[in-house]
Amino acid sequence: MTSNAKVTEELRAQVDGTREQLGRTVAALASKAHVKDRVAGKAATLKGQATSLRGQVQGKAVAPARRQAGRATHLVRSSPVPVAAVTVAVATAAFLVMRRRSRRNR
Image (tube, rainbow, N blue to C red; front, side, top):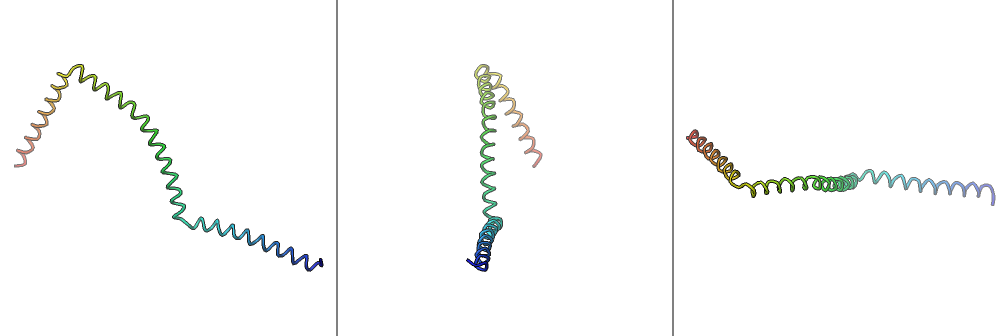
């Protein structure tokens, strides 16, 4: 092989390497240019995080709520008369307030 042929072969190899590198660069730039795809990917990530957090929050909130509901149920079943009296008093107060407001609007 002559020195010219050797130089030509090296130049072709460099050109091929440069083309491959340029192709990778163009592909990277194209992926950055597709904002819609990037936003969709980010949205999917955030959705997954939100779902995970929702599960954690529900797990922490449900147990105390159930305990309080159980306590309230126990209170009503153990002494229904005071609870009924308070309910009647609140309903009467609400009725009187509504009646007074309706008379003022006339």
